[in-house]
Image 1 (cartoon, rainbow, N blue to C red):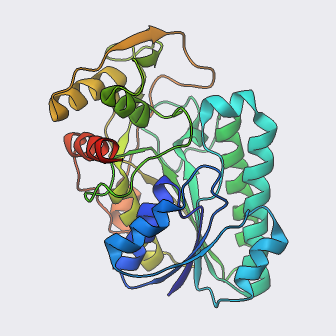
Image 2 (image 1 turned 120 degrees about the vertical axis):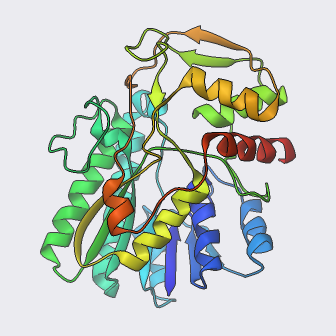
Length: 329
């Protein structure tokens, strides 16, 4: 199949492009390089020993994106392109609503115009807000706590309404939990521009000495040790979930959690990283971050059964792969 991957040079997108190439698909990438690097394209090609088509376009620009649709027959789309940091979304909400909603509307319009019947959307566990973990896809109320999560929930509603008006259309909404890790080659991984907003790349930069210490946002949550609890999933397992969705997605609207199904606190993650790497991580406790919740982990039974997808890599492997990429980066 010819698969268009928007945001395909980003963290999750790049690993998914690699997984698609290894499965024999042709991959077209649309990315504006705001939070990704062109070098990632060469590294994907190097690992896969295959080529892919790259287009530096802003997905929210309809005319620019249409140049791709008018040039390639596209069988399916995986839509990653979007802004993704919780804290930043609280500070710059309009940027998040504009970028994430408009890009999703543009992608849906292209599907309608060019008769593309399959779309996989990169959503987030943040749509569950402050519900009680574990989170199930059947939870009826999406109680988001920050603009990033709300933008994802709104995109979900847009795509659901679009699918209802087009009965032959298949939309897979994949709600990610917390991807970490990197490809075992250490050629691609989480490489954000500027100071990282997510925990693992910040942690690995502390381990490397690039940053002095890790900041832990709050130690007074009602959790095992007072720090936030999250569900960490290896990025290669997450990429495999997208390939499984392509193969198993049927007509209609389908929502899946992609996570490990286990909760790990910030302090437990630090301990696992120290065990995996033999490196001591200095940290400091600071105030809670606006928009964060205490606990977030997945029930993944639906994805396990319907997508035939089960994550394979454990927390120590995630930590080792994250560090290997940062060390060699």
